[in-house]
Amino acid sequence: METLTQKPWFQHYPDEIPKSIDYEVRTLQSYLKESAQTFPEKTALDFMGTEMTYSQVYDAALKLANQLRGMGVKQGDRVAIMLANTPQSVISYYGALFAGAIVVQTNPLYVEREIEHQMNDSGSKVMICLDLVYPKVANVKDKTSLEHIIVTGIKDYLPFPKNLIYPFIQKKRTGIKVDLQYNDHLHSFEKVIKNGEAKEIELTVDAKEDLALLQYTGGTTGPAKGVMLTHYNLVVNTLQCKHWMYKMKPGEEVVIAALPFFHVYGMTTVMNLAIRMGFKMVIMPKFEPKDILKAIEKHKATIYPGAPTMYIGLLNHPDIEKHDLSSIKACMSGSAPLPIEVQNNFEKVTKGSLVEGYGLTETSPVAVANLIWGNRKTGSIGIPWPDTDVAVLSAETGELAEANEIGEIIIRGPQVMRGYWNNPEATQATFKDDWFLSGDMGYMDEEGYFYIVDRKKDMIIAGGFNIYPREIEEVLYEHPAIQEACAIGVPDPYRGETVKVFIVLKSGKSLTEEELEEYCRKHLAAYKVPRLVEFRDELPKTMIGKILRRVLVEEERAKQAASDK
Image (cartoon, rainbow, N blue to C red; front, top):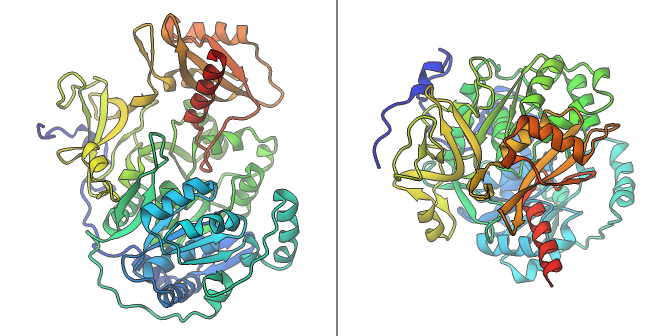
């Protein structure tokens, strides 16, 4: 394939952002050691009133590392972490790395089948999990490679008296009360840390080659695949993020940590960046708009990375005007398209900058973003980050596309993964020469700004026309009564497929199907107007707040199959 010679996006870089960065070839965990030396008494984590300094987090991570070694974990072994955002999740992540292990982040919402697949595929030796999910892990342990389970609870790092009250609240909310009988293979996280030794373990790590992380993809087209990310991949993306957010000052910023750390987006743009820069992380175990509003005001938070639904949730909360959000300087939105209406309204409320970025698990994750302080274009995902080449692969020629020609977005750069764990066929299929094939359809304009039109597999083909759900959703989000929207293609005997939309209305608002159709006809070509509408109280989402389009598609397929019987 031809070489990329034109990089028109560089003309938009402000002087503060370098076109190329002199990256540090080092381990990811060395950032925590460095910040513990630079900011020993500075608050690293604030968890519902419990504060931990950088030196305390560093000591706890070292204690865990030595205890993992005592359980037989050797360099290159895999340690799974199945935790919500808590101090334990930060300690576990860096503790596993200090032990020389490869972290396997595991979604606490996984069901037993998914846990079993991920543990067996990764060959994880140890699982660190919440007490609430322990029963699921225990049920599959004997079918996996797991030798040890370390269990912790939300209450373990809560301040008094919250730590005493929380177990009762948890039992009332979930109906789950877990009685644990600790033994040689089942351990208490509190005791593991208490009995650990805070000493460094000597490691010989090749940061460019050795893995820091196996991050499993969603598995929408079969079993989830383990994305192999090296220390260097993650260090690079953390530094790219640092340079993109060049006005952020080391040791001074306050970050709202609501994005899950088990998702690569929250891991890089919140946890790893904060640890590298000595920021204070205000840790939120789950996204609750009222709690986020209070936290921003109380802690004078300056950075709030999120997903579109997180910003939508705040904007539609009845108490938003009662809170001072003016401390916010910068917000990076990812994981799903950011509706323009949401961006504009959030910036009006906070006076800060909210921009959309783009990336994938396979790119650690960020590859492209709008400038936080500089020229940005409405509807664009922005321009490539330093040292990152992005192009569009023409479906017609198989070569690089012309400006404004829609094709598949392709990426290469030092943050791109090594490949998929134990899956050379999938690795080979997702690369063309040294370019990573994203599976997203989009285009680049003449000035080097990129636009996503949709996932290749989400495109709707109706009556021979290509329809991109994102285009429909953008129009729907501009309607004053609509809070959330998702468009999918459903089978149609005449057109092949037709457009169905799922709508969540704002509180107190009403909208009929007829009114929606009339609105859409004013803003969309006739063949794009939704033929089917379903109003819902809520839409299925991931823990990061991304609307699960595939769940809605599967529901429709099941309905269709039932009606065909």
